[in-house]
Image 1: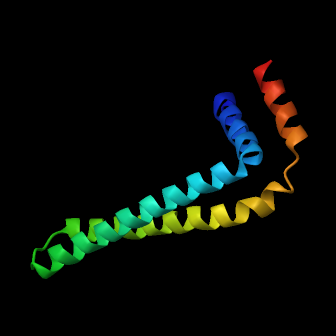
Image 2: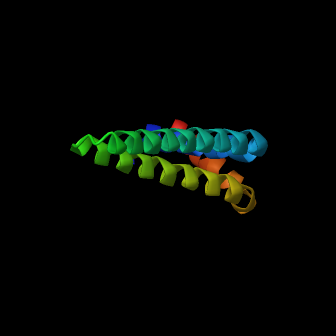
Image 3: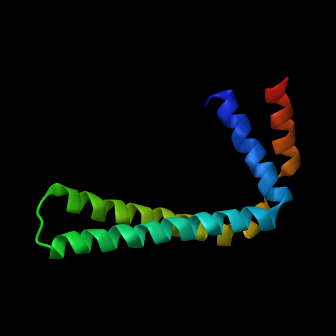
Length: 103
């Protein structure tokens, strides 16, 4: 893994531990956004299907809708599980890893 990517991930873990409410709210907002986008895509695919239009784009839009809903559910479950997981993260180890990378 590239050090810049690793550093960014570790800093996001520190932020999430220090600001659990803000982190959880951010995940929930993203989840709602992707869920809404998924429903819009599903509605568009049904609308195109009932207009008797044929083509692969209806299938692509429906698949996109499913992927967006799956990602939304992933973010929602992550927001619920994070307060439990955060208690078991060793913050000193994360900070020492950040200091090691930055030097």
